[in-house]
Length: 426
RNA sequence: CGGGGUAUGGCGCAGUCUGGUAGCGCACUCGCUUUGGGAGCGAGUGGUCGUAAGUUCAAAUCUUACUACCCCGACCA
Image (cartoon, rainbow, N blue to C red; front, top):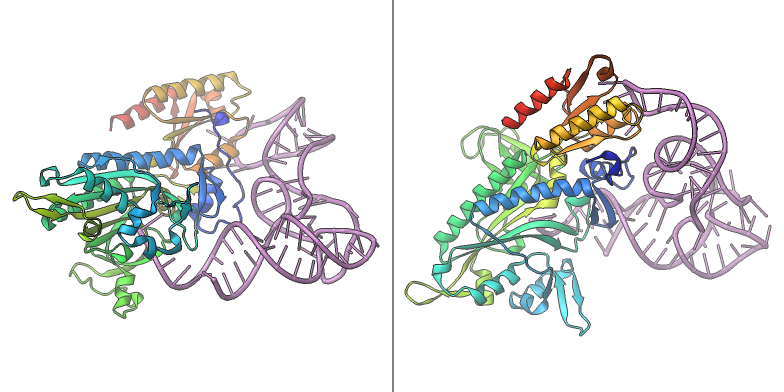
């Protein structure tokens, strides 16, 4: 992609209404623009990252045996009355009417719709377990949207729902999702903790949250420095303890000591049990021909929130430091004097074509600006590897390979090409 | 919904107290010179000063109402 052709409006100044670093950087890097409070446009650069995360989630969900569906955003009031949630939900449920004055809502979650789908189409235990997921825009009319896409009103989420014949099967589905979520966040390249959580308003039994660790996280969690143990402060506070008093104490699981960390909740898995299936009469026949209420689990990952969380965890004073798996581009070629020197332009274009044919996602900065602007922009948007082609190429045929984290090396085009070949082999 | 704050060109801001008809930096357009860390000179484009009403000879500025947005809190993936 040529930089001069991409719709990539970067900003030198930090917009005044952005408080947290991920929001500031997403605006400055031209990833998003606000439409209204808590609702954003995704620009090409931001969308690339969003899609990369979405695809990793999709691949791992598919690998787990879950199947993708797509449910409607607009949902009829009748379904929500079956579970009493039309009343319970309050103003966070955005309600609308059609031309016939029938009531609908914009889906903040999809338990009702999916349970309706399954009760109408699944009749036997032989069709279970079943795990259906979708990647879709949700709408929750938050009391106070904030921090950009971290807590938007409209956001992209992967939600899935498992249907099981009994508790053991539900537990298996739950554990499979837990493993799947670990794989997903590890592939994204993010540091995280799994936290025992209050199952809250959705109700049900077991529930765990996946937190990406970041200084600006909204949640305070107590984690062990040498095991998986982690717990949300909300749970401790219920028991009358102050979370900060735990710092440095031995972990309850006997491994290591407790550290207090800030986390961003990016995933949440629940064992719902029978509550929704009971309310909506979702039954199947078991192997004795008796009608059984379904057990359900639900599993959410905030895709758009992950974009912000990744930035909160990976940035420096210059801009974003994308983990390789979700960087919008892998390589940026900075051609100094592209418009004035044909040798530079040719070398840069040839190199661009070479890397592209090797399978790299590459950007070529062909703008008329100087090194400073190009480098600052590249560092801002966080491309992991830069290749600089400039005066040095004219003088000694050498170009520079510069990593976003600072390491750099200089060599001929052939040398650098070889390095890229090695990267691809890994 | 309680508390606090902001609203002037795409972004960042000054001007408001003390009313006189809008300005600075960056960005953008054109020309020339530049090009290894956000270049220089020259010439330009762009704003009903959030909205409405009021006071006044005159309102970005004073008054009133409203709206939007941001932050803290309660709530939540």
